[in-house]
Structure formats: structure tokens, C-alpha cells
Length: 268
Length: 178
Image (cartoon, rainbow over the protein chains, first blue to last red):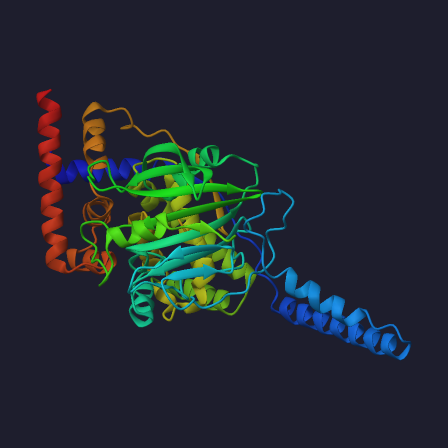
């Protein structure tokens, strides 16, 4: 039998070996939910204003400053604290990269960016999106914003070309209170790559894990991800290479990627 | 008569795009049944097919509003699936919104020795080549369309297909020789 026919037979066999039992579709959030949330927030603000006005009239002037201070303080998570009780789901204010080679993130870390690298607005997020355990992620690229937008548009998956030759710092909730090594070991499949090894290392002086990765068994090139636990959170610092068929963005080098990853430091 | 099912699906897609939750559920269940064989063929009959299908349906769930041609829902979903399969950079994979449950079905060729050799050989191929083989030799998708789905030039698709077949033949010869 010709190999083409054998392939067809193999794929047909594989195709028929599963049946759908159920498809579970979540309810779409009601469009009124946002309106209700806005109305609720407006009502709270109105009540607070009334309380402040009444308080001032009565000579009690403490209410307003307290409310303002709390809102500001909860906007930035404590990245350097090792206490497991630090809340992690608070939204984090996004900020543009600082001028100069050091990028100071509001997430509570810094990295050194070689010339030509910048923080990607398109591929970074600082509040949890669909996965509540994925708290934030910042991506660094050499692509121009227009080139990056085009690379993202070219894929239906929302990821792909734009991720090639980027470095990334991600923050996850450490739901099982695991060590960096245990987390890296358990999550090594999540990369969608072949994890060649997971070994202990130090990340900015803290106990961490280094996962060495490659696309396929035949690959000679490897990349790696650093994992470090931080109280009830886990940081993953990594970089993404390209497959031989992918085009490397202008100005991006493996050396540059590694230097960004290796420069990761917690905010002091 | 022949166009009735397509018209039905078109109206279902339009309703789903306008926020009809029942239509969206019907559409995703229908797509799930149609796309699972492709997911399973791409993933070599492994459980990864469930994840791939879940990811694909989640993408459809999130982006159904962006589809300009409702009648293209099947080809669009297939393209999403193939690209998700090829895209091994799933570090940013978000928790799928749509999940599926499947049952395994015993198949007659599952333990056939020759097929096992071929399966091993196919397993060593690049994912893009594997997708190309599945689309062209099983789904009978013309090369030009395969190339579009994989976002590569047609000439590249042809040469990759030939190279993949050569590699498979060599792998099979080696395994027969041992």
C-alpha cells in the first residue's frame, strides 16, 4: 500500500477514536453587568461624598482622606513581600517603561533592556484576564508597535508570530503554596514544549528553578524559564525563540533575550 | 434542499453573533462534533485532542463576533484549530472558556504493527508537516488551500509535503531494517 494511503488510513483511525460526550459552554456575561457595576460604583462614590460633606459639617474631617489612601495603596501588589497573606488579585496600574536601560515595573521587579528593546503594550497585561490565577504578564520585544500589531493580526490564535524572540515576566497565583521547583516540575507541560530538565537555581538571590526547553526532540537550540516563589505568588521569567521556519524580528538576538531574563531583580 | 443545512447554520451563526446564548451553544456543540475528528487526527489519537478542541471552541466563543462571513464558520474554525495545533507557544494559554468531555472508542487499527511504525514516524515530524499531511491526505484539502491555512507559500507547502513523505519513507525503512 502506498504511504499516502497508509497515512489516510492512520489519520482516519485516529479521527474515529473519540466521540464528543458533552460541550460545556459558559454563559456570556450580561451586557447589563457592566452598567450595573458602574451604577454601583457611582452610588458608592455618591454615598461617600454625602458622608464627607456631612462629616465636614459636623467637624469630623477624617473620612475623605482615608478612602483616597486605601484606593491608592491597593493598586500595587507587594512583589517583594514573602508573607503568604498578600492579596494578589488587585488590579495593577500599567505604566510606560522608564527612560534608560532599566525597566522598573509596577509589578515590583526590574529588568535591564538592551538597546532596541521595549515593553510591549499589546502583549502585556497587569490585571487578571480569563484565568484568575494568571495575575499579570509583561512582554519585551524589539518589534515596532505596528509590526507587532501586524504579527498578532496574522494569527487566529492571538499568539504566534508576535511572541517570537520576546522575553516575558509572568506572575501567577501560587494556589498550592508550592516551592519554585515543585511548581516548575508540575507546570513543565504547560509550555507546550519539551522540558529537557528542571533544576534548582537562584533568581536574584532567592531559591528558584530553571526549566530548559526545546521545541522538538531534534532541536539543538534550547531556551529556558526561571521560576521563583514569592509568598502566595509565583514569578516565571522566560524567553521565546523561533522555529527554523520563523522569521526573527529585526534587532532581536538570543543573547539579548537571555540578558533580559538574567537581569530580573525584585524591587527593593 | 442541498442548501438548507447551510442556511440554517448561517442563521445560527448570525444569532450567536447577536448574543443569542442558545444559538451559540448549539453552534459550539455542532462544531465540537465536526472538529473532534480533525483534532484527534492531528494529535495522533491522544488526549491532547480534547485540549486542542477546547482551545479552539474557546477561541470561537470569544471571537464569533469578528467573523464577517457566517457561512465560513467551519473553515474559519478549522483554520483556528490547525494554527493552534502548530503553535506550540502555548505559554500564554488561557484557561479555556469552553470545555469538552469525550469518550474513547476502540478502533480496529489501534495495535496494527505497521500502523504503529507509521505513527511513530509521523510523531517525529514537525507539527506543521503533520498538519499538512492530515489536511492533504486525509481531509483532501488542495495544496493551495493548505498553504493558506498554514500561512506559508504554496511552493513551500509542496516542498514540505515532499520532504515529509521522504522522511517518513526513510523512517519506515529504518524501522523495517532493525
